[in-house]
Length: 200
Image 1 (cartoon, one colour):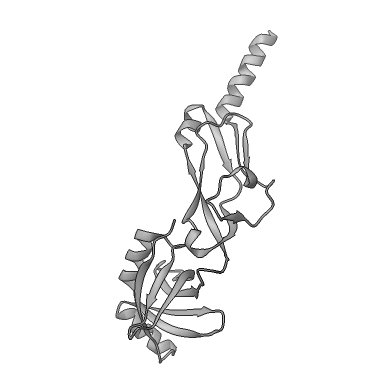
Image 2 (cartoon, rainbow, N blue to C red):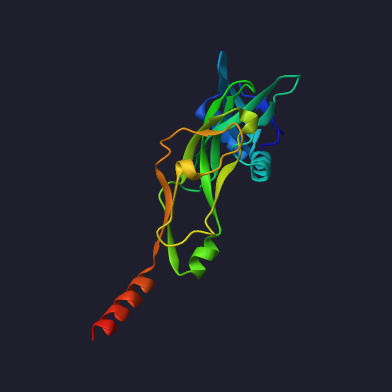
């Protein structure tokens, strides 16, 4: 479950391209926050602080956006734009949320137990990397973990097979396959050699 972390931000009055470039050279990111019944607010945040907070708490965590003078918002990161050249973050968009209203989020699927599959000389084929879910912001996990250590050849895991945290529900068909376990090319080759030997 997410924990609340604070991100300090400042209002940004000058939103011209030249002003944005100056901010980035000074170590800031351009930012904005939007939500129900509020006009979008242009902000700036320190690049290093945003990186540190997200690395520690996760991108899908709840954040307390502190603009100073008692102005704060509970929000989540909606989008981060990166430079196609340097892969550095350029802009971050926050979405104001209410702790009493459900939100929809795409959660990353993380796989645990891959080593067990490799030891069985099998191949894990992951077909879905993210699952859209809905739930209250404070119940939203950072990701969905799927343990494959007990799976064997031919086993599959669908969206409906996954155990979700209390209050979190998937927003896609439950029979969609998330991953499957297949034979490796080495195993297939071994079986063909064995079949040929038995046929002689």
